[in-house]
Length: 116
Image (tube, rainbow, N blue to C red; front, side):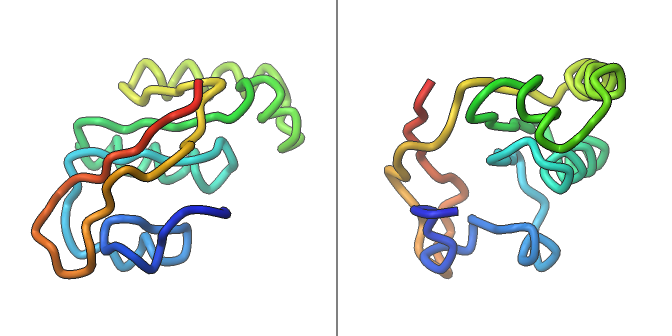
């Protein structure tokens, strides 16, 4: 994804590097409602991460149709995710990373400005 400073922080991951996570996060924000994002949201939620969010640029229906997902299955999946505590934020994307801790920093948070 353009504009995401993966190399600038030990707190921002993509679907390849998230498997190298060396700590248990308190919160996770996932950009996009693709199959991999849905899987990781479910995994982190099941592991007990307190605050799991999925940012959906458009709406859930359009995003799941792009995946070719049956709408009944998509609706049930979204119901199960939200009932389990995952927050799905439609019409939302990251417009800017206000603060990203540099590699090796003890800071545990990233500040993002969101478009909604």
